[in-house]
Image (cartoon, rainbow, N blue to C red; front, side, top):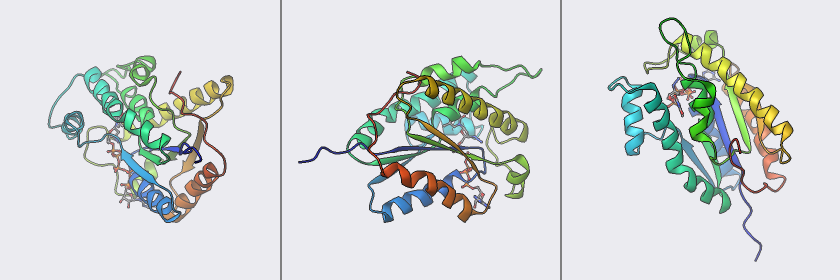
Length: 228
Ligand code: Z5A
């Protein structure tokens, strides 16, 4: 009997209103129609006890120290890390709506009243070192102007234009660092694509599909670990 092939690990990242929820759901349906076993996981996973603390914080129903909430976001990923690994190794594709990159991009965007960064990039990265490494990250990029056309940012804690601008800059920094690391490593396995999410739903969906379909044409390497 042939051994089960490891399935692709897909991460969709992006700013508020970039269409992550819409596009991850559409991708799930498209892959299912294509006959793939696939599971969609959304971070933060607000259903677990840790996720409920995060949810309360994001809705401003509770206050937490900036370091404590950062560690909770990371713990929320670690509580699903072994599930993700098992799914992938048993041949089920995993799509994550947000992952460790959001963890860094948002926490490292927090500033004090004088505009000084509260948490360093390296500190923000450290709790997620060793998580399962995705095969592909699709970053849905949207300008604040386009986000405004979609009804503007929402009601939650980080959904403010200035914060979203800093987050966008941080994501670009993370992309550059990831690409530098990949070019130095022997197992060049992570692909990072920036998708212009300001276009129509159909155009964005087609662009995403053009990057996902090729993943199934070759065998996935054994699962890597982030920043290791
Ligand atoms: N966060 C963190 O700090 N640390 C972490 O480690 C993690 C997260 C994992 C909640 O995330 C917050 O947690 C988030 C980051 C932080 N704060 N912010 N910002 P979330 O993922 O639960 O929530 P969200 O980012 O705010 O998602 P969202 O509001 O649901 O936005 P979305 O999923 O990107 O977009 P959408 O719901 O698919 O679409 C928004 C609207 O635009 C909707 O009306 C659509 O119909 C419309 N739309 C979508 N695409 C299009 C196109 N192409 N054209 C026109 N209209 C469109």
